[in-house]
Image (cartoon, rainbow, N blue to C red; front, side):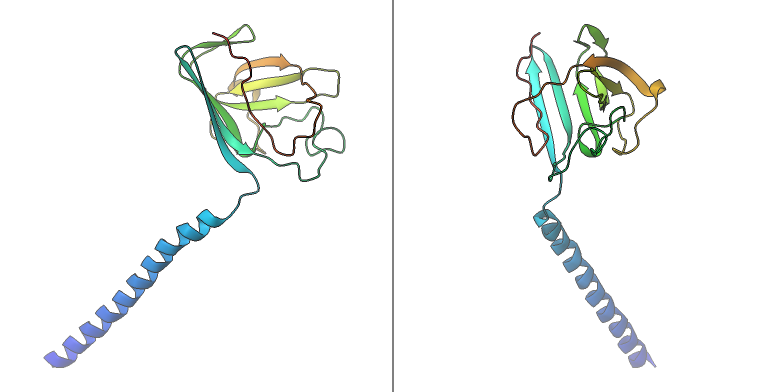
Length: 171
């Protein structure tokens, strides 16, 4: 019967429209809800231009939330490899070959990794060629482009959230 067939097709089409409308509503509303959420570690991008070279550091800023950060009772133990950030490893990108503490670093994008040591020892800073790595999975030594020693400085005040800045940058 042609009428029965038309009614069945109409019923299927009506059900499909309802499902499509429900899916569209969910898709259109979800980004607004997600955008309203506050993340425990907010994303940052820091870009500095030095003459003709652009330096970009990008990552997520961890928050202390009352925790001891470094040392035997800290979130990061002495001698443990750590990315200075949260979630995915913090990256640095340079659009030209640069020199870091007297050592060449070819243009490119790298993840940053620190190995803190008990004071007064220096920490090591590693630039890894592995650019997409979760913060709890440090890359191996074979992935390093450059490793240098750095001396941490006490700022004299508590920093609740990791802050990145470039106070003195010279060509």
